[in-house]
Image 1 (tube, rainbow, N blue to C red):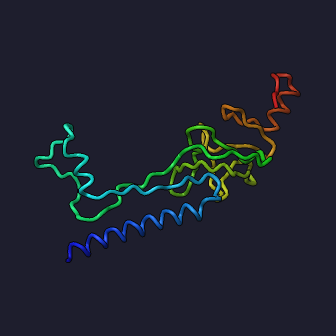
Image 2: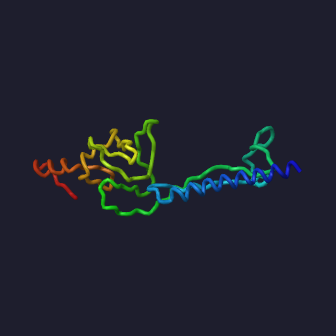
Image 3: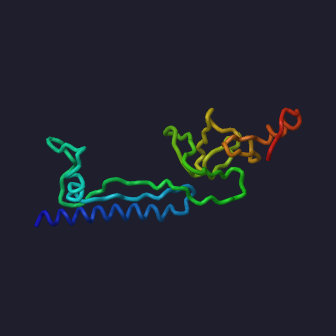
Length: 175
């Protein structure tokens, strides 16, 4: 009787976790750069059946996981597949095609995001909507203002650099 209640309880706890993840996915569905999460679960006996004939596992004297008669959450997996890219008409809205993240300087240290809805602060640096600095190879990215271009390789050229190049004749500017 007690074992049956325990098994039912573990099932309810896993379903609650699944609902939490689903709710979070729905709430953030319209958030720029958000990636959905999925909860992976399994029952103990199913895991044992998968591993019983695995020649790479030595079960003698080795813990193979926590023993229970219920189900449990194995892991939460984030789906990092490419999302839809929309043209907003703003130079400060950037998108990544393929793998990769934007590096961001936060009070807690360096963080990563795929959200590219940036702005330029009053000092000319590219920042997130929270005011955190976007980082490049040499630290904070200076854009000067909203008038800049970004090449396919990620090179940012400010309007001042383009004008200087045209005036001094040191090279060609491609827009």
